[in-house]
Image (cartoon, rainbow, N blue to C red; front, side, top):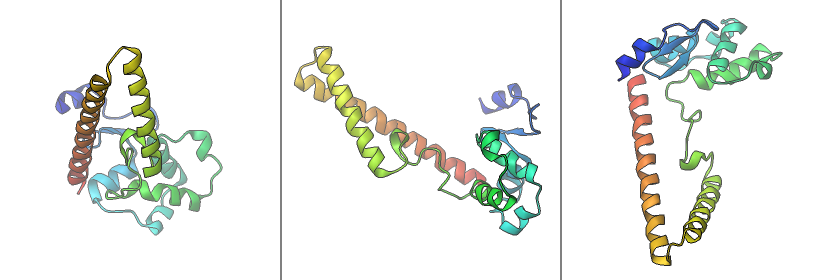
Length: 163
């Protein structure tokens, strides 16, 4: 399936000279290709200070930053913003560090409570008895746990491939 995806997806983006990486599964800038796929080590501040501002902005644009948010930023600030993205072992740039799309443990707990309350309410509206409601909640929890374990294993495999 990955080979078919690579054949369908163009190798070079018409916008911004970015290329599609089948290993990472997304568009990457030339600097990301250099440090994440070729050199396979974290970039140093001095190395990034030697790069052009346009290349640094390309990295941020490849990661989803809007052009208006990165316009007018000094080069030293750009280097500080780009540095974590060019570290293949960096866990702070994780897209989904916690389940339910949460960024921290408190947010995860609050979202879990809200999810359980909303599901329980939905089940009672549909006419589920209390034992059936508990069984449905347990089944949905197991499905979410399986999904989260699959996401974690994909992240582990992706980090293993980068090294």
